Length: 248
Image (cartoon, rainbow, N blue to C red; front, side):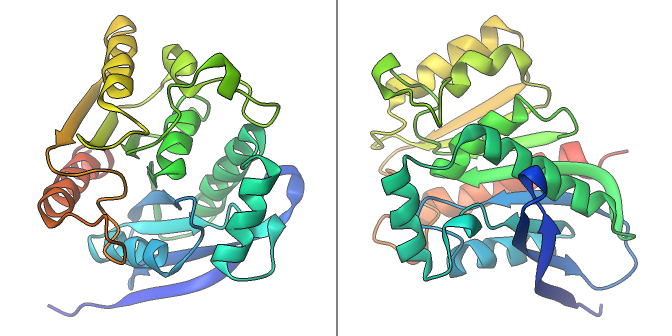
C-alpha cells in the first residue's frame, strides 16, 4: 500500500488574534482524518516534538503542534524556553486560547474529520489536562507526566492562578495518564490525588505508572528515555485515540 505524508510549518491566528506558527503533519490524501493537537514540553517546540507529530500522522491523524512559545522568540528552542521560564511560564489563559485556536484551524481544513484529541508532555501534560477542562470540543486527552496538575497554594501565580486538578469537575472528555514511578513532578502521590478527583466527579480515565521510569521517559534524545515505558506508552496512546477519535 502506498504511504505518504505532508509535514510543514503553517501560520495561524492564536489567542487574541496573535500571529503564531505551528507544525502540521498529516497523511497524503483527501481524508477525512481525525485531529490531534500535540502540546510540546518545556524544552520547547523542538525536533523531538515534531517527530512525535509525524508519528501521529503516520497512524492516520491530522496532527498539529502549535508553537506556544512563539511570542518569546525568535531564537533556538532552548533560548526561547529560558525566556518562558524566566517570565513565569506560559499564562494559562493564553495557552487555552492558543489550543482552542489550533483546533479551529484544523476545523477549516478539508481533510479534517471533526473529532480531535490533545496530547501533551511535561509542562504540556499539565496543559493537556488544563485545556481538556476548558475547551469543550476536545474528544480525548492524554497527559504524559504533566507536572503541577496538583499544585500547592504557594506555587500558584498570576500566570497560572488555578491548579488544573481544581478544574476536574469541568473535564469534558476521557483522559489517559502515563506516568513514571520515579518521577517527582508529578510524584506518585500527585497521581493518586488526581485519581481521587477523577473518581469523585465520575470521569472516564485510565492511568498507568511505569516502574523504573521517571520524568520524560518518551524523550528518545534524553538520558531519561525508557524503552519499556515509551513503547508500551505509545501503544496505549494510539489505542486511546483509536477508541475515541476513529470510532463512529
